[in-house]
Length: 134
Image (tube, rainbow, N blue to C red; front, side, top):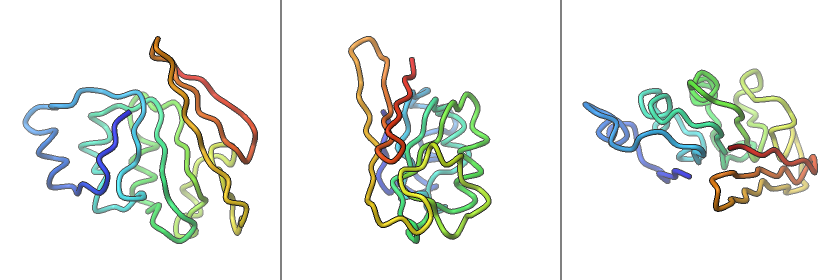
């Protein structure tokens, strides 16, 4: 899992240029709640995450530009979000990958469980479903 917190584009690009000093990752915690001052295409596409998790709110970021960058990332198998962001209604993943849909007050969560062999499972509390990734 790779988590950069609120690192911004200028520092992200330093990690990727002239060479990718991180490599690829299986799971990427989308930076800065999906704010477009972070999550540069240079970083996200070079990481080639299999799965992303966005810790956003309904009205707390989840910018359209970042959602598009994630969806275009090479090798992406799934993009999960805590909330359906109101500012990007046309750019969200399928509902099955979102823990809290529009106007939801339930406070559902996403849980990741990792195994020693590298396999990890993502559980969506709203849907009650799990998906495993190698």
